[in-house]
Image (cartoon, rainbow, N blue to C red; front, side, top):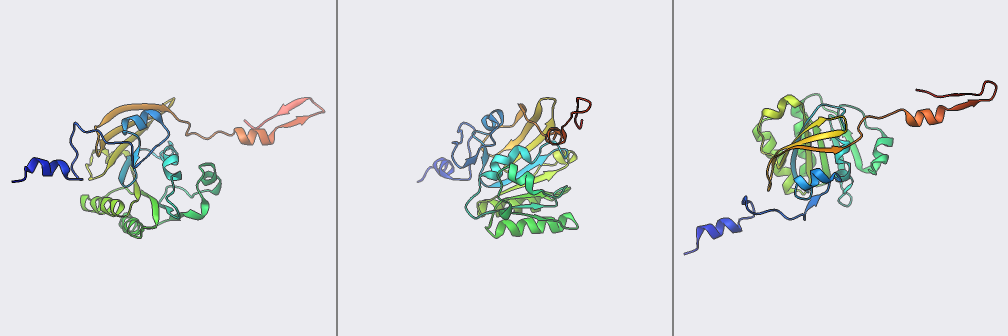
Length: 227
């Protein structure tokens, strides 16, 4: 008779706590402390929830993951808090022709749209901003992502961090003076990790404008700049 324990060991969906996952099939974030805590990076497919305030670099911090385009795959932004700019995409080495933005009137339509994008098998990543989601809806998104080799980043307000969801990775982002502090609340194939800190510049400055606007007034000898 086959030992039932051997069947459990061989099951691909079961992970044992004494087994560390390999670094294969992962996208590096480029932030060493975070990648180390994630056993090499973010899994190439599945649902990633990110609870954070807006405007702290919650998208830019994953630029390298978004850059890891699967050939001819799209990146879809759904109900993003602002309008995407071509310059922002270019600086992050994202091909503008492969990035789309969609706005819907409510969370339910946004969730439906995200699931359809994943099921289409045409997306590398879907970034979805949503204020509330049910367990069944989260599970559907996770299954759709893993079944079609795609990632979905679910951005939710900080108040949603206490709600447990069936996700492959659950992160909480908090700004610090030096950059960002990340808390891994849950990760598939790994342990929760608190207080992961790394330098990260998320606040834009007017330095480029200042350089452009600098004029040397030869009459007064005064250098004028925009501050």
